[in-house]
Image (cartoon, rainbow, N blue to C red):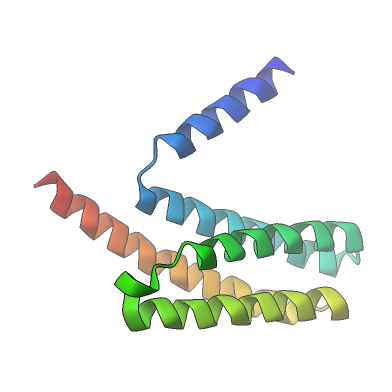
Length: 130
């Protein structure tokens, strides 16, 4: 039990001390991990696993959507919001139809978004160091 406590404390500390960009990347990484687990659940016909991880991805995507600042983000923010809504729709379809295909599409989208944000966060970090 103490080992789990240490791991949980480490995770909590890493989130509370992370920059906004790092938190964003952590959210995407979590969504990617949970999407893979949901795909695995579909393939094993484990509806509990599938449903559990789809809900986790939905929670993360909803958080990403809520964090958008449309005043600052402009068109990019609006496009991300539309993309997040599409992801939520695909998650619902995957859950209802017990189909891995929408989850595989979502996985590719999340990985692409993560990679793009990683480049942006890395570039921003470099300019902050100067």
